Length: 194
Ligand SMILES: Nc1ncnc2c1ncn2[C@@H]1O[C@H](COP(=O)(O)OP(=O)(O)O)[C@@H](O)[C@H]1O
Ligand SMILES: Nc1ncnc2c1ncn2[C@H]1C[C@H](O)[C@@H](COP(=O)(O)OP(=O)(O)O)O1
Ligand SMILES: [Mg+2]
Image (cartoon, rainbow, N blue to C red; front, side, top):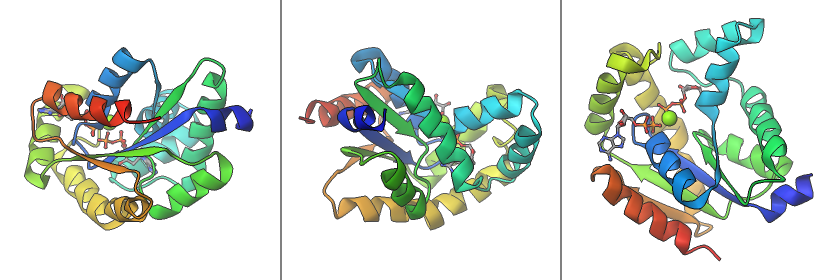
């Protein structure tokens, strides 16, 4: 199974909270048929299941902190294995959130061929999340938690981009533009893959 995962394209989608990762991934799924795995969605599904583990996760996410690496990596790995026979590519959205997560992913699963760096200004991300919070029902889309998520993004996640830049696989995408224009640049990056 892991051999098959190695044949599939793995794309990391990295960006701050509210930068537009999920929005762009949906469009990639529609055009390219890749499998979209959002770490946040996987975690929220566990919370929704009402399990004891879900309760622990919910408390961490509510504070805008990162859940333990092993928990999220196991979830992603299981989801990839479940899809490996039907998937020519995987969009890994919201992971890695720290350099260590990237290193562990590569040890246990495989190497990414591309990192889409979805880039928006801090004030833009806050505005979008406050708006999303009106309808998302997400307990972390509130002003206090948004601020913590943003701080953690700059501290822990931005170093991930520098780490993969040295490998030449980072494509920076300007996510201040309208959704369809952002997608134009995303599509160009994916079309450039061999
Ligand atoms: N390019 C864009 N321009 C304007 N609004 C956007 C853009 N991309 C995403 N949004 C909006 O911003 C919010 C956050 O987007 P989302 O895709 O959920 O981000 P993330 O998954 O990175 O947190 C959503 O409400 C979405 O509709
Ligand atoms: N790779 C990861 N490692 C640790 N915690 C994670 C994680 N991915 C998600 N989480 C937890 C902490 C995040 O604040 C929360 C929501 O994540 P998300 O849905 O990816 O947010 P967003 O799409 O707004 O960037 O879930
Ligand atoms: Mg998202």
